Image: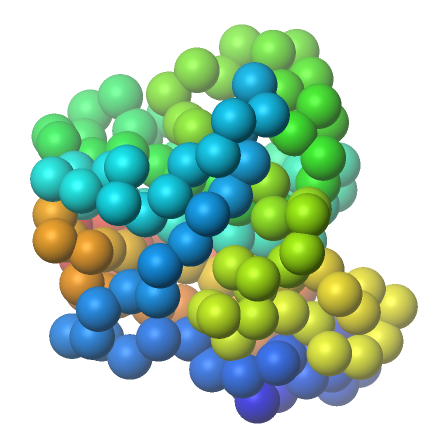
Length: 165
């Protein structure tokens, strides 16, 4: 379990992020149009998995905006913004913000993504949601970089994540 904080108060996650150099765990998440999207659907592209508790919070929204700005200049790379929010909320947010360089995906059905990636929050007021993390994958789905953000209210290290591409 990763030890992280929310407002300085300790909380735990369900496990640890995948190790660098390993194959990323397979996933099936839900797109804005309610169709499924799996890791295999993105084979051949580098991926930045921007993972967060809820798109309706300030820091989460900021991370989606910042990765959206960067995504336009990333070669052969897709940015997947993943949370347990309903696809409707993700779509509403991106539509209202004019964000079309990122792909939102929802783990609302069963939380399997969060459990398989070891980032489901295990206790505290956000239990069941995803912790804030970034995972970078190469074109073959291998983990190149991970960051488990230690304080949920903090932004991820964008520069380190993008440098891993």
